[in-house]
Length: 576
Image (tube, rainbow, N blue to C red; front, side):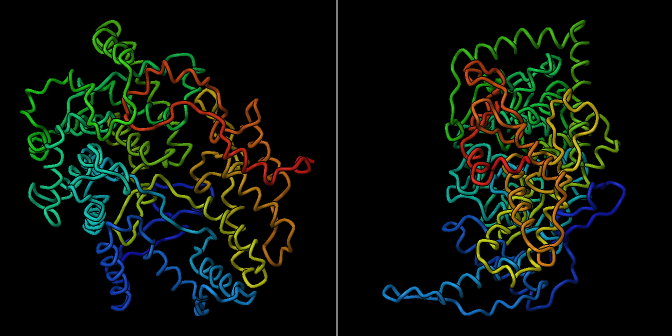
């Protein structure tokens, strides 16, 4: 039986800035659980599968069952039901409110945060499985139970037409279907295997929609690393970009920048994993023509209509063609190949910096996998790769629909709002222990230092005083998370320490305000992760949107939503 572990970490390939407060990961124990508890888990799984086409998101039932049992909080408050003509009384509202707050308290973790899944995209798990397969670490990292639950997740989210979407609520797409098809095959399913013929149905969808050459660029990269697509069929993403003046990469949105970073390394190396029997079989299964007859240059611009959200103008394709036929010819041959090697060294330096400053979380799940394969390509026996393996459990989440990979955790975000909800209920005395634990997490998860070294030269912003979306180890400042956590800290500072614990030191509050103000733009709005630095017209000439074919911001802008979050609590007195 699976168990959610909280605030634990051990072994030589893990390190933490706050003794792992906020860490959450699932661990399998074959001896855990009574027959009744196991039956309850199986019931939740069966109910989800039976209703999977009507209700796509899970209810985090497994996590709730465990935490309610551990916290031993009485949830027997009677349910309030009122008829259409019945009067809404103060007593009825109070009882309903108490029932809700008590449940909220019952699913709080021991370190004070509220665990929850933060996922939904169907292109997270397959690249991880593919990278573990290429590096030979699949069976070391994933047990048979991990594989079983990952397959359960894939089966549960297969659409009726046999394909998989970009996310669990979406229509079938080439990227979702190809990646999940490959994932099933790597996890042990045969060409005709899978639950209810899942593999064959998926393959039929792929071939009926043009084959794997019509997968968007992110998928093309993953398939090239695996060896079932050719690097010559990918539009250029030259690592030489990172040799440009540092002000140019700095204006790119951090997620795009840190996704393009390892992609450009893999592209520059043209890395291909071991060509195994499975890889050779996939070459036959995924394409509509023999692998060696495919026109890879033509495939560069190929994308299935189901994936094509934003068609690129002809001018942009002409620019890509110029880089492909002219630029790459120069950069891959002497003496310009020396420039390529210098660029690759600079890219790897940046990757190592990002890994170390995030304790090998990386900024998110997509970047985590790309960084992990990149450091393995550089050195298969490196400590960096081993540190990456140590953080994989932090990304895996289990629920009644199976095991999935998170973008990363939402520990801080959920905790800040849960505390605010309890404070708004006016049931403070009854839930003082819950508030005290939550306050502890808020204090322990604040980032206490800026990234090490000359962080500005590595395109990083200040982080001292900020809060991340998840925990302190992640390290990436987020403006709205900082605003919500600061709001909680200020509200709790007005209350007795006997109820909510010791308040935060004023200097730490000032640090938080400093981070927020540093992210304010000239027009008064606030950016999310880093100061907004790009003019909007850059979208028109962006060469490096690299045919993603789904909505993905490239440059950072200020937003109304985030600005509003500050305005609802921010007053000049906070600066006094």
